[in-house]
Amino acid sequence: MVEDEQIIADRFCAGDMSVFKELVEIYKKKVYFLAYDLVLNHHEAEDISQEVFLRVYKSAKTFRRDARMSSWVYRITVNASIDRLRKNKVALDELNEQTCPNPISTAPNTTNPEVEAETNILAGHIEGALSRVTPRERAVFVMRHYNNLEVNEIAEIMKISSGTVKSLFFRALKKLQKELSIYRGTPQMEVNSE
Amino acid sequence: MEGLYDRLSPENYQVLANHLRSCAECAEEYAEMARTLQIMERRTRPEPDPSFWDNYWTNMSAELSERGKSRPIPKVWMMSIVSFLNRTPRWALQSAAACAILFIGMYLGKAFFSSTVYVDQRSHSPKVLDPASREHSELLTRAHNYVERSKRIVLAIMNFDPEKEDAFALDLPYKQQISRNLIQEASYLKDRLSVSHHSRLRTLVAELERVLLQLANLESEHDLDSIQLIKSGVEWQGILLKIHLSDMREAKTGFRSDPFLKRGQNFGSL
Image (tube, rainbow over all chains, first blue to last red; front, side, top):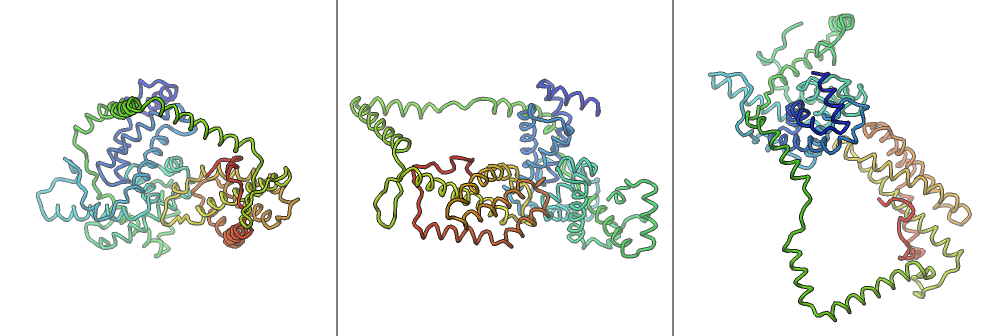
């Protein structure tokens, strides 16, 4: 897959716009979910993901091959998401009210309404906690934790050093720890020992 | 961080494990972080409806086509202009055109062909300056423009709070470009101001130049330590106070630059 991506990237940057659709197919889910992790709203994430590909399309000729194509696309996604966050300044209470139209929840099916209610409350707390870290900290955290990007990839995307990535990650983690401290010691949250 | 995601090499993992066994505080902190990550794992991302993905390319290409089209001029707007012109008598249109040409000609003549007029606010009598005085007046105008533009850059840096704002908000590349232009201007001003009697203004130009140099040499908007250093330097040297005093002196002496001299004519405006 990596090799195919490389070929598509090379052709795209050489001006072959016919591969743009393939590029969109490769990155659409990655871009959408990264945007969603940052803005925590389906509609915003949908708008941002379209905006990202429009920018990619327009900037094909100016893309310098000193970075990976994936890093470039993610960088545009992060920048667009942070711009949107700044414009909207979504409040926590709005976040809690946001719903995704026709979502198919990835939470495990359960017939126990109590467990389901607890899961929903926890999900709300987690998203609330995420909304309270700064955009940069959130970007680093979600890229590492939910998008499985390595430290050096994140550093390339955000044009910062690896040390700064780690610093931002730990700052985010500390804040999340504080926000979610009520779950400390809850039996189902206990970490399996080493 | 690598340890929390099982990315450590076996050797480094052993080092970490040994330390955690011997240091209760670190072990507790490490366990807390791991617990928090476990909690964060329970976050679910709502998966959009399958039709969202199926229609993704269709919607994307429609948006691309839409944005690729040039916007047509609204017909209603065009028609209203045409109907206005048709209703107005020809002699009125010709007179209006003649007046417009006259005013443009007067403006161009005053702007490019007349001597510089220095308006003395005390006597209210315009004086025609000789070439040396005109050059001096232009120099002061450039110096005050430089101070004004540098002040805006400095204020942007001083008002930037990394705790509350994202580094992208600083728009550093644009400010660095302006700073480089201003640094070139500073070089010109320092040479010229030294032979006049404006030593304080010259000192201010030099101090601002140093700040702009530090800014222009920043490698990234995320280099918060260097940005803080610049802010500390500005505070310690009292640069904003000196700019304020310079503005007060300018107002007191009644100096007002010729309004027909273009502001910022030698470097990009901010």
